[in-house]
Image 1: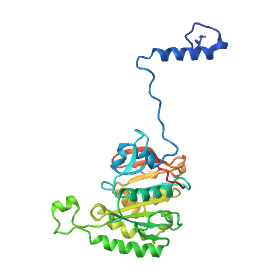
Image 2 (image 1 turned 45 degrees about the vertical axis):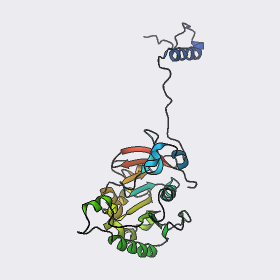
Image 3 (image 1 turned 180 degrees about the vertical axis):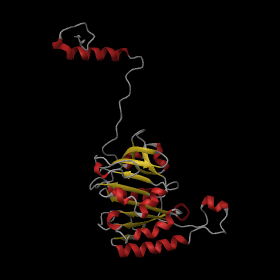
Image 4 (image 1 turned 60 degrees about the horizontal axis):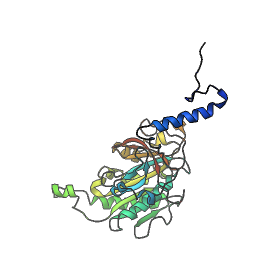
Length: 290
């Protein structure tokens, strides 16, 4: 047998007043803290905008995509270091909103002479999201995608460095001038049909993306993502160490990026797998629609 002590320090043994005794004890503990109470635990917000994140000084170091959990600082995409990114998520988890935020960040950080955007959007979810002076092509079917990306690939090959390029030019990437190409692909599962994926026209250039000024960002539904991860374009992104993002999804899908499995979560809540920063949670920026 044993006797359990009441959780109180006010010398009152009456169990009917234990709640008041606990409150009194907690107050005494708080009063005795030498350095005062500890900081409140800060959590990821359910919704945050780029405008709010731009108030933090770190936001000037790249394109703002959201807020990361560990330091509650901006989650950034640095196009001079990272060329590509891929996103998996269920319906209404924030996939298209992610691309909308990317488009807004392109226009915030670059001029039309520095960045041109190619949008692959079979469901027309990104209509009018890219200003006309930034929009190189808006494609809604496979024939358009094949025609436009074939021309883009041919043009980018002219930027490949040859033997005449000096080491200094290689460091500065100054042997060509012009806009970088940003290819934004929504609903990649509709685009990458087996044996008929027009985006694969860019795959041979993805490894030289920094040299030729190419960025490919794709979003795809979570269903079948574990198998789709071995599709050639996504496989190239994984091999190149591109950042992968998983939004809300069914855990039964299994391991999707490395050993990381999807989880059910609020819209915009992301598991991020980065070559440089490892695994972390983030809340993607809200841009007005989902």
